[in-house]
Image (spheres, rainbow, N blue to C red):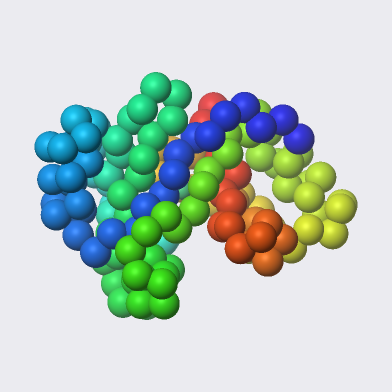
Length: 134
Ligand code: ZN
């Protein structure tokens, strides 16, 4: 598998507007857009930093993964996403090595990406997303 760079860091927040005042007004980052990802029950705000970005994740439903994360752990870094060249090959390689996956097949993520999550028990408690954008 070829990991190219950190695509984004997902930060679970209760409220994008409120969080945005720090990341935008204090840190000077730009909120490039906000997108609803129905599948994951979140609104996602994109804040690019060179080749990577922060994604502020605000739940739209108490049953969604981000709402559950905040309920259990509070606001904070929820996942790290690595950009890969070929997500199908990456998942195939992980399956062949017996690595537990949350997503056996890629699904549609924010910004038109194809994404899949690795089970955090495999990665020292870090939720890792693989992400392909071409
Ligand atoms: Zn993500």
